[in-house]
Length: 206
Image (cartoon, one colour):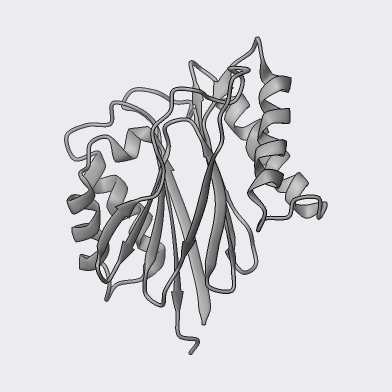
């Protein structure tokens, strides 16, 4: 199976700066992270994305163990207290299993043959609050299932059924264009916030 993972982001209408940040591990696309800064905090989101990518590259994060995610997030949370805050959601694909963690109100969806599930619960506690309560993400990613990570600016205008229809309607098109298609749908009536989408799937290798 080959892994495909792509992301896209757009700024709020009228804004030049984007408070969201995302990163997809290349090559392979087996790790992805989305951060959504709060209150002119684009540097905070980008900083946490960079910290995460470096921590992952160091080999210090055992992605299959949620305590390892929670420990790192708690440390970052404490280091940001008193400054800008950011949400965090990240996943790693190991064989056919998705492992990850979420802090704040970004969301993960799984679009599978039997429907669409929200994999995360909403929380107002962001990194930098000093009270972050990381949530685990662990789910199997079947062939042709699609995992969707979204900042709140992207998911709030959309229902789960709208996300599912968009994903299924894009099945015969290039997977790299799916994040932009979801952003087009979410921003159809205007972009009231910065918005970011990352999508991941497993497909038969050609």
